[in-house]
Length: 177
Length: 417
Image 1 (cartoon, rainbow over the protein chains, first blue to last red):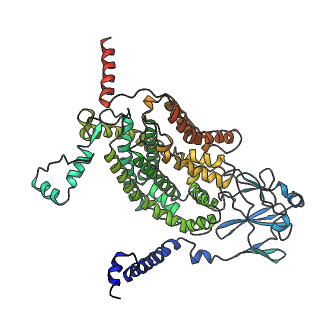
Image 2 (cartoon, rainbow over the protein chains, first blue to last red; image 1 turned 180 degrees about the horizontal axis):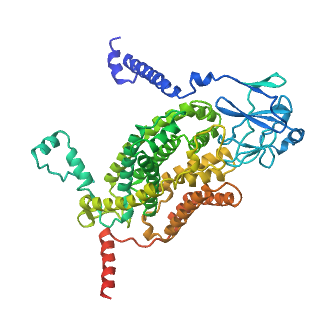
Image 3 (cartoon, each protein chain N blue to C red; image 1 turned 45 degrees about the horizontal axis):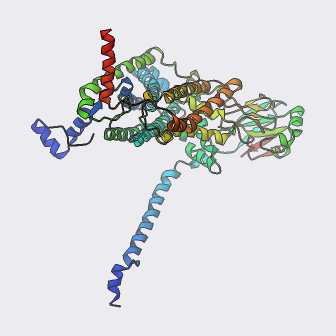
């Protein structure tokens, strides 16, 4: 293959050196990515934040019509003991009236008890209970209103108040998280 | 401006230094011999005022950092500690907090000056864009700093602003969690905001250096918008002319700054921020600092979360496109009668949006905010390109020298009468 030495220099065929350059460059890119990753990932919730325990709530002291706020994962959770009137209002609302349609039955485990994360889905403010046109919640920041099922009814918020994972431990005690 | 240096080192030490690091000639050419158009008015002193404010904020900020504690259970108390116990602490904190307001006041006037005199046009497009980048970095720094006292307004400002990112489809919530370091604003958030609040001013210094560099390459615009043609006749050296004029401008500006700091230190603040942050109670009426109000009004004017956030960010970014939206060859509003009117309407709309941002978002306020938001974008996207294409401009003077001579003639005529 003695004639091929001349053509090697004139025709753009990959040489061993090109392969080395590309491989080195690729490894350098991987190394740069691996070095940057911890710098970015350190900003995500740390182990102590993730380990925040679940919260138990005793329901026996909450009278009908009352809303109790408990703290879970640094956020408020509303536990609302709904009156018969409020339950009826939530259940009888046609889905067509809802910007984020969801039946009341899907949002509660027992009709008297509504458990929602008390953070407005717009920009994170805490809505005020028993206020607004639908007697659910009203957000003072940008005017979103929620109904007695915590569903968005008007204003800039895009979705219903979130229902956290929770379970009834007994008839009068729930565990959130 | 570029060209051979006008600096000749006089002392042996200066000659020794100059051969090794030509910093003396660099300083001389930039801040002594640098030619400035001789017809500049006082609107051109805001560059110096802003440089002064940046340094003042860094100096007061660094000393405040010596007494502040970025930890949620201690932050609020450490501010009160600064106010009550630290020697001169109350003055330093009020100077820093009101300094932010004065910084924004100066930057808005600086931006409006550029808009009125068409300073963003060829060849100063990059200079202008660097200015908008500086404005963005200032907004970020101001917001981060506002969170540190850990009052109610601090906490809820942090919540609302970080939640803006949750509007981004699919990845929004992950980004917000990443920014917060948790599921709500808490100690990790305060810690990183403090670190970034300390970092960004130095990033600002670097961008400002590029801004000034770009300015010194193209040279300053001037009230006529006509470029310098005869450096000998139409410019004066930076020192002493601009230096002293800038010093006087800074002096006048300091009168207002000192008045605010000493006589009305809480006038621009919110009483709610003297209540410690409470993650379970949102204040009844939350508003940002005055310098964010126009953009806040735009956010609230739009009844859709994602579109509201897009409108907010667009409103901040859109001035960067001015060199291409306003493509009229005539720079100064002096020779553009309709553009001048449109400019003042735009200023009024900006102030109006600011007022509406401070009011509750309901009823007539909301309708007005929607109208003014629409006009804000109309001004940039429709009015300016249409004016650039169809406006009958007045004749520009042949040169700065001709403009100055004409103005002097008018004055002399008046004197003879």
